[in-house]
Length: 161
Image (cartoon, rainbow, N blue to C red; front, side):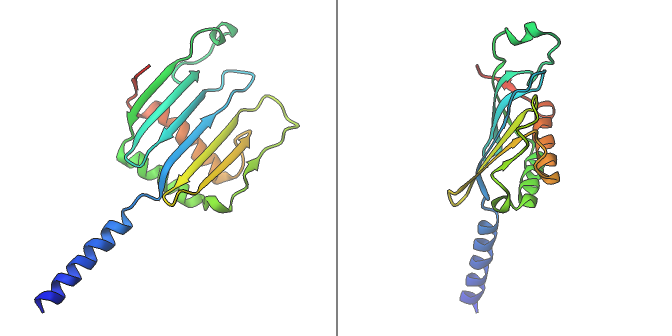
């Protein structure tokens, strides 16, 4: 009986460890330029919630004139995402059913729209890259883009470069 109880306890611990394994080994989001003051940055989120933003323009500042394009890049920033925000990000990704989505969305006949690049590396090493000109591929993708772009304002970022 003692061995059976030990075996059961071990099986329960292993099932918890397996279910808590991260589904995504890297999440990358890139916001591209438009003809105006769209934020331009690349964000990388790791399963331990550490996050890096390579901020080019209008990521943490607002543009007001053409002169704002001539200044230096904003820099590289780091943060550890709040646990609730990381969980929400994973929830949004899970809801997309990523592997079934198109690799490209958008209408190149329309100019002046920013492009989003979403690249997700799964725990098994496979990847999914979505290029979305205009950031309106699907309703769920649009919600994900909004959430990720708002992380710039809701986290505590530290400049490292």
